[in-house]
Length: 174
Image (cartoon, rainbow, N blue to C red; front, side):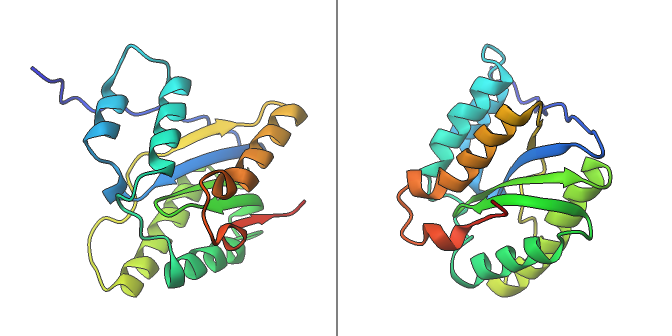
């Protein structure tokens, strides 16, 4: 019997701290990812590694291209100083990595990012319904070395995935 209980990762909410957040399109979460999410025998860190590796190569929920990519890129930049201090992001075809300094609670920031952007994206795609997966992965930045590692990871993720439009998918202040 398969366990249908969905587990969510705990969130670290530290206003004034830098946060690395990853969130995915709702349709990108397929059976493979559901199995990984439910596997209690692997750590949260290992889950995220396996999920990132899989989702970088998956076409499920890959809506973040063309006009949607342009919209989301502008949306994240427009929210800078309004809801967070934006440092970097990478918009992959079916998920986003973003690094920012919190100005509000993490849940409020994510509500604005995901809630408001989903309305605009659904309008562009002429669709209705849930766009983003409910859960997101966050990691508070611990020190300068961690910050550098995360920043480099975000900046290089589209290149590592061999995306032809990789330069259009990243933003960074450094």
